[in-house]
Length: 223
Image (cartoon, rainbow, N blue to C red):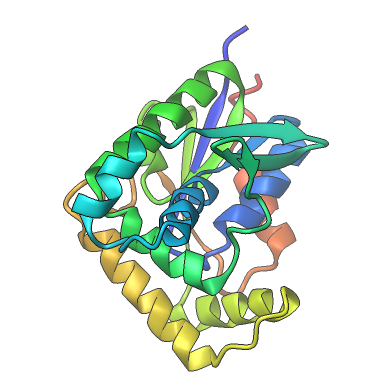
């Protein structure tokens, strides 16, 4: 039986992860959070005291980095060198470092290889920045989620508050703008909408409305 892959791309704070998780559960396949993989590599670099913007420091680390993904009770777990880092990679500092480290082509190539291997083994809903354009260009269905910068900043602010972080919403907005700039202007696999992706603006839509809209385009896959 062949595996099914659904790609959901878009900028930070557009709702990709939230929507992808619910869609995966609704259609009963696994969800792969690729951003968590970049965060995991960034966490290791930070713990080693490395500069995540400096390829000369990061590239040598990659050969000795063993990253793996597994699923337990429908939850994605991320391991680095045998250590479960799932709950350690969600801090604002790791978020910024992940955006910096993701610009390095060697990092992306290492993680894309793992992502493609997972897509061959499992049916997946995958979200990220370059899934439909680079990681899984032959995905069965592609979506590009977006929202206004103010709405994305508000969502991220509420998310961080829920996790116990108190940050100024204007600082979060600046961080998102910086991440957008990094992601859209990197030379290797930049963030952009795939030509065959379905565009969904989530700004004024509820989570349920977006999930329904995504799922409405999936019926032909399971026909």
